[in-house]
Image (cartoon, rainbow, N blue to C red; front, side, top):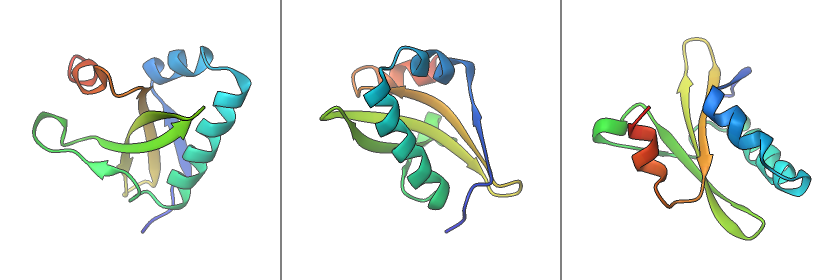
Amino acid sequence: MAKATRVLQSPTFKKAVKKLKANQKEDLDEAVKALMANTDLGEQKKGDLAFLRVYKFKMNKQLTLLGYSFDEGTLVLELMALGPHENFYRDIKRR
């Protein structure tokens, strides 16, 4: 279990965060803090998405997926995608 020292946001992630309301951002901040403390919380994907880990959490009582990658060499947590389960993996493959 390693702790992330830096957090980077992809442009797609930044766009998704801009659209969130204040209470949703609080839920997201809690999820990011949890990931920074323990980067192994998310599930490692296989196949085409082997570079991706996905952390599932509740945002306003709705299941939300947070896609991220973690580079242990530099202890950087890169937030890549945020959204509901519907079309989440399809959209990530297109990037």
